[in-house]
Length: 448
Figure 1 (tube, rainbow, N blue to C red):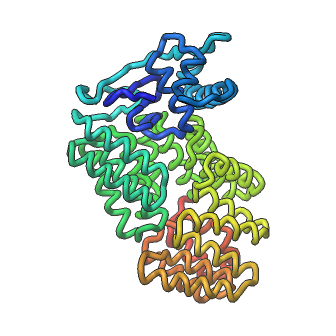
Figure 2 (figure 1 turned 60 degrees about the vertical axis):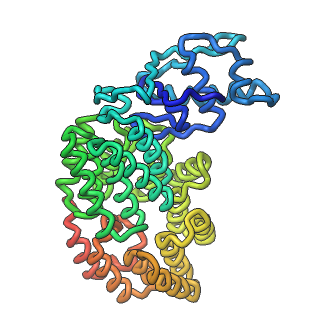
């Protein structure tokens, strides 16, 4: 399909950037299949006009004969995405027997000439940049950030740094950098003491540039939750973010995580449902819904939800990780190990999944295998960060409680973000009767 250079289209809560092959809702990528994306571009470019079925099929499947059902299926998929926008019901009109018409109001912008003055649009309310290069780099960064792998996050950092270099006052680019470093720390790709302070610095820079930047408040709340363990300040930041932009899905998602860890599961479920309402196809949000079911002991629901995520994208490692952890709680150890193996094929040498595999091996009585995994983690630690929380888990799976407590204490010294889940993580049930465990929980100062 021919793509108009340096042009974007805004409609409802969405921004469509054909050249970057991105559809954004409130600044965050929305997954679409390539053909659905091509069809959307074809409709939006000719908004208000009838586009025949034949023309759409020629654009999406050039020089290829396909059945009309392929067009129907992809239009249906587009409607599910667009009509999840509360203002977007009925964006695509069917003209019986003839074709389709995009009927939502569309604003087309030429990026090479656009003066991004910071007009408070619902799509990207903080686009304070005059630089088309900065904006394109930002879009690339958000796209890579959404993929969550270590390599993708590093590519996202490079893109956001390009955006900041092009426009040092581009607040959302600093927020993107904050999210990248926070995610690297959260996923234990970097040590918490290395990643989260950088995330904090970029979130604060974004707020210095624009105090009413909802995304930056959310980013700062994430740091205060997972690194500073400052529960009151974290909640205040999440609430501030939502007050500034109630439709920002990520703020609802991260607030739900806070509420779950804080012991308020009903409120947490409300927030993760709100997040999914704003971004129903988000892999992260849908995985976190499974994560919610896991931590509340609703294992059958967790399995169904996480399998749904894998159907959307079988390469999304967090869904396999949480599915494996759910299977292990049901005693389905072989199924759990199979899921962790899937994670390691997607993310080789990720200490988090290796430790999860080690815990299951120990719990299943496969002592030799679990001890071999401890050696694997020890060897890996010579080359990259290995979270002590994970090593403690393998010892706990083996019933080696003294070693587990020793490594948990080291996790406190690391400021491990995983300790936020200390009192909910069911894998510690073998340690809970020991008064030392209550002491560790007390050190987290969980809200009452």
